[in-house]
Amino acid sequence: MSIFSRLSDIINSNISALLDKAENPEKMVRMVIQEMEETLVEVRSGTAKVIAEKKTLTRRLDQLRKQAADWEAKAELALAKDREDLAKAALMEKSNINASVEVTEKDLVKLDETLDKLSVEIEQLQAKLNDARARQKTILMRTKATTSRLHVNRQLASYSIDNAMDKFEYYEKKIDQMEGQMDSSPVEQRGLQNEFNELEKQESIDKELAEMKSKIVQSSKAKKEEDR
Image 1 (tube, rainbow, N blue to C red):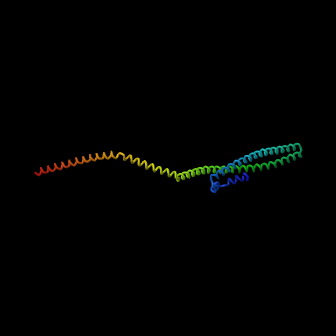
Image 2 (cartoon, one colour):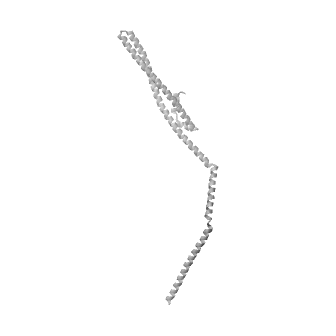
Image 3 (cartoon, helix red, strand yellow):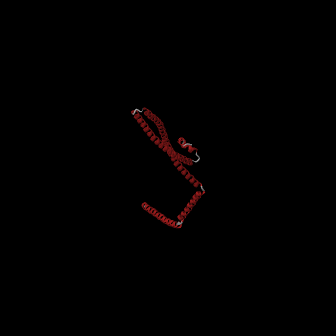
């Protein structure tokens, strides 16, 4: 396959369609990028050769035009010297050279057309390559993210994680028990304090009850005195 045919195939190819059909998109995009890079190098190398050939043809065209001008000058000189035979021969040489000029000019036009097409195709190929590289970064990031998620899911589903969580619950229960023991340790001291508090409360109630009885007695005596 020629370089230009391969270049055309790559430019006309649809990267998305290639990736959709690929079993391994990451591998496929690497292959596509490598193919594009190699083709781009070859095309640029071929373009450099075309440019060099154009320069060679341009120099040859300049030389041919100078030669044609020289033969024309010689024809004029021959006529000035009444040498019509030499003038015809000089014009014949000029005609032959002009024929070569026409061929060279046509070749230069074709080279210019080729260079224009190559320039457009190189730009298209570079755009395709940039797109593929961008997709490669996205695919790599998505692959890494998916791999990480699969690893986390496997870890969450594994026995070791469940076992570790069971241990956490076990130690939390042990800590709860220890805290309960610490809270219940001063029970006797709190019970004794409660008894004293009850005694003080009972004493206050008895005192208040005695005061109420005294008031009732005094009120009864005052009423009897009034009745007399």
